[in-house]
Amino acid sequence: MTWVEVQIKTNAEFEEMVTNIMYDLGVTGLAIEDPRDILEFEQSKEDWDYIEPDLFNLESDSIVIKAYFPEGEDLADKIELVRENIEINPIKEYGKSLGEVTTLEVYEKDWAEAWKKYYKPTKVGENIVIKPTWEEYEKAKDEIIIELDPGMAFGTGTHETTILCIRALEKYVKENSIVYDIGTGSGILSIAAAKLGAKKVVAVDLDQVCVRVANENIKINKVDSIVEVKKGNLFDVIDSKADLIVSNIIAEVILDMINSLRDYLFDEGIFIASGIINEKVEMVKEALIENGFKILEINKMEEWASIISVKE
Image (tube, rainbow, N blue to C red; front, side):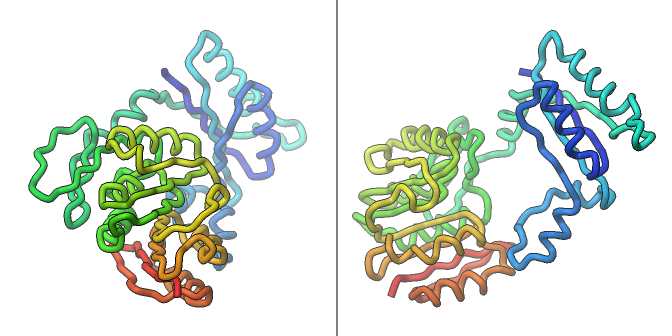
């Protein structure tokens, strides 16, 4: 399917008027890029790890509002209405139009398929190899192959945070371990735990797309008798304890988990946390120690870190 991305560069004071116009034209969702958010994040102790680079190119009082229209017979009419209401007709009160309108054609198939040519089999641990489902690969002795199609879910297995988790799982998953994977994404860490000998794995994610993709990948790897995927927020759908919990999210979410973490781990249970930028390692480390965990390892790769701790 072909979609048209409509971008509206406008002033922050016109945000409500522009969004109302777009909703009246049948748009069900909008993306708003506002450089003022950067200032708010810079003043916050818990800064976000990612900021859209294009935001730095906007003037401080400018915002960009993006909407997507599917291809159809009335598409040209809708875009013309956007231009008339926002770009062409001036607002009497202000003596100028609401903003500048640009359009870009995007193809759904291209979004889903274009990146695949860059995604190749990769050895990410001592023995674990991530193999895209569409690639051929000759398995070497002792290698553990994980077949993966991330689809629209997070987790190709090649990101530093995922590699740090997989290497930790290789070291700490024991035969017959019970493992919880909180924020499973594509299911890669759950699959790795199952193939490393865990007897039971529970994968949790709040995103329905991730739940669907994780289930698909788990079946492809023939570990669906071991791994169960649940839709939920963090520990909301967990009612028992594990030998090991792994979570590859971001520091802020990990900090939210720590207060209740002990309730879901057996004594001497292991917690593997990743998705932590180097600047926030001390913050997470201190929270773990304050909640009765002993730090076993802190491993780093580029700007990312993983922290491995044990319940005392």
